[in-house]
Length: 139
Ligand SMILES: [Zn+2]
Image (spheres, rainbow, N blue to C red):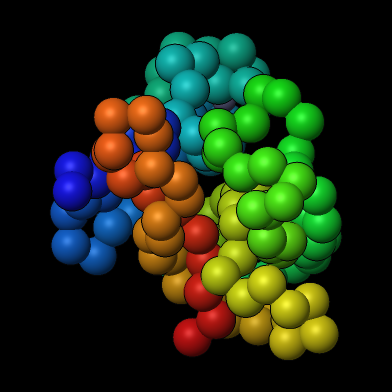
């Protein structure tokens, strides 16, 4: 089966030890993810690619208990949808990112828990290509 990443530009997948790709502003030191051509803080164009730490800590989370409204890339229906958790993850002291968590039981989550970047199957498209997406898993 062919495998592709959802939004290939946001990470180094399928490289080993995949990292998310953010951007860093040389003028005001702001870091953003995903990468942006201009700095969202100072509007400067003096931004460069920055590979983000693979590990982070959990800041906050919510449970997605129903099929998200459009635009949503997945192709589950209300009958096939499995609830998942979505977390705000602090990567080092660099940046906070929002991402799916591999732990779907919110009772297993706690603030400050250590997480590591991984890629998980998301859905299979019409051509039979498996689409994977980034997620964070407890270490
Ligand atoms: Zn800036």
